[in-house]
Length: 546
Image 1 (cartoon, rainbow, N blue to C red):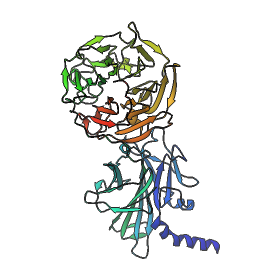
Image 2: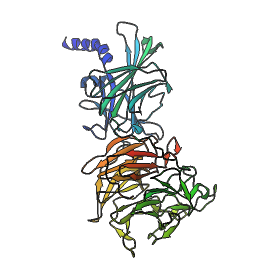
Image 3: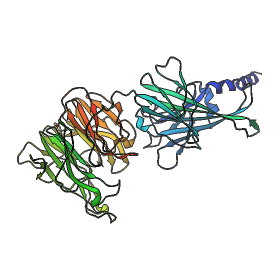
Image 4: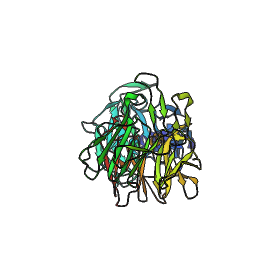
């Protein structure tokens, strides 16, 4: 009799459960790193674990933008259904679909379907739209719009207005409710940092049958678990003239109050030829930035690095395309090292690097210039070798020569370097094995040793083609997703500060004056080459390297 009463109570409770419970995804939670958790409740947190059996047949996929979504097996844990995230996909978007069944709540029967989505990062540039009509027909897309959170709703991959939205989370007394407008978007201010549970509802007046149960409509509920961090820093309006021509993988430096841009790729991405490369040197007086001046051209280079130090500009390495457009590529790394003369137009050759090097980066710590990462392309891709060493050159010595120091604990190219707190910081890059990374390594010149720094926020691509510069005790990095990240002295993690107006990579972050940085060049995934300069105003302090 007790079992009969228990079974009856569960049947009677089923409509009530479905009316207040939704499926939520939480990836990389602090309690279970490397895991994705599936909850069944009113928000993205543990509820009655006995109810998890009702959604055990849910299907979960990881979406990384490369090929078909990957189905992940779910197992029942203590408080949630769980899945292990594959290596290299711990920052990917996750989606879920589950058909709950046919319901009747004092009216016509309806089919109840659940969907869920989450991204693990606070970086808005990683909040991907999935556009998967089969697995996620009702999708919520979050963006940042002038400091507010914009929530767009899609139905079957198309913008869908008049969708009811409900938001709960930290700082919200009860809930925020709204309806998407004619543009299918709903704008709101979230109170502060934290995990927000957002759900959408859409009803289809479509009759059908599931097994032996007929229904007259379909109720779709979709959730979005949003990791949110308020924006602290936004690019300030500026009147700086745009670059005369968009360029990527160029050399950029500031010296004596003048911004210099040399070389780079004018052509299409991943298509290299003499016609697409630049040997142009442009300069802009930052004290009176009326217009760019074009200086006499020089050797065509890209994948080079430049740095300013004590009023001088130094140019290091790069590669030259020896082939014409349409011909087989012949890309040759260069060992060149040069200093811009006082006339600001011609280069003085300095001792060449021991080996040709491109796709590297350089920084000056004290009076020593360090070059790290990159590779040597001799013109034949099969003979390309990756550099495994750190080399240095004392800029203060008249008879200096390149010396080799403790080898870095990585083999990468397309990384970013910066001088910070008397050390050399190496951020991200492309590994020789394993693809792009957000890992950080720090070299201590005093002890000739390497240590591991905090990993950048975001997905692996956030470490590819990023750029970095230090302001006082604060190291600033900007990434391909547009994120502005900060690492302060003594901190064990990067802090998210805000977003660039133009997401870009293979650009340069450079000092403009004592409390401002200027973001120059590069390319956006959707925008292409970017000519607009952006300015970040930080707390007043001294900026090194001008």
